[in-house]
Image 1 (cartoon, rainbow, N blue to C red):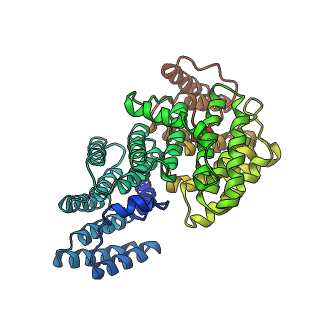
Image 2: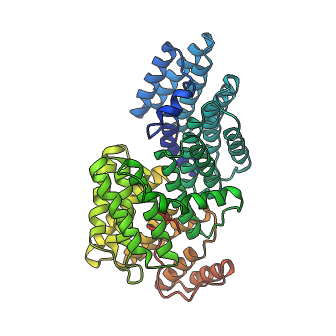
Image 3: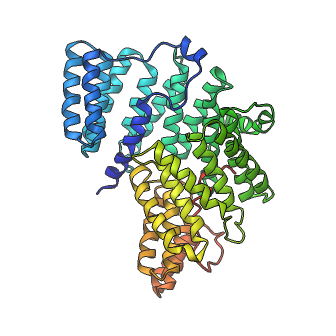
Length: 480
């Protein structure tokens, strides 16, 4: 299957996120002062609901036919919102039917209709998803669309909270796609809106958490974000959290802030100061304890458990060990995540990969680790096919297979990791080193020399390899 077909399948989830209501309740003070989101006429809405039901059961041809009927009804009734939503429903169905070019036309048509209505949040959604549908070898068109959407987001709007939520969701989608700079641009723009209109909100903290994880990704990839006032504002916002946290009452906002601080401290511990492991564990433990009391089956609880497990999985970074509790906390997070997203999610894949990494550090758990890595990779190929954590999962599975003597399978996974790595920004020398080391193990010295020479040409500071370098599944989420 062509790569862009795999990517667009993953975007179905992103589409549903951006077209749905916000993940977190918006402030009544803000939403009360904003105009309501546009809605289609009742007759068109019924058809759109039916198209959505077909899509939910993977009957995409029927979904497309029903969306076509909705489009015809909307055009006859001069229902512009109905026309735009119908085009978006068509785009989603066409995407699933692997008719990518037609899906692009449908989403662009929706964007054109939203221009007529003057609804900026909906224009941004349509422009972003038009751009996301392009294959990786066509960069100019999506770059123009993403820039156009961001410019709209920074213009005057009567619905700032809706714009901020769409920017946040889009930024997370870009981060999953390995587009770190665009992700930062969108997330920082969302942060500026939250700080202006909802400075004490949970949404602001959620955006900061996304930025914290993004910073960790950039460090691991060797990507430097563009310097400028937005970057400085984000740094100041993150730095101010430690003092703010001490003044917060027990609340969902407090859980989110503790999780952000845990991620930030863990990133620092990995890259500079190991004493931050204790600080990270304290923040994450407090987040889990508070979430257990306030929201035990929520996405916030998953986030807090994930942070705590990552600290426990990483605290023995210099001895390649993991605290026993790490596996317990990953499994608890997985159980809640499965209930929250029964059809699967990128978060589930990340949790499985991190669980497998913890298991792989114990020889007795090698077979279990292999099974969990394979499951994580299957999820990743659906929801985040070009992502840092999926690349690391392939590399870590190769380490396990190498230990089990499955050299052929190990090489295959290293090659898959390299294919993903080439599509991510930054240097990919360590992945070439892994391929070189493995070629030596297979006595393929010609290939090994080629891999090592290519690695050295990319990065002169690579040390002499003595074994496979583990992928950083856990670190892929952290702030340094």
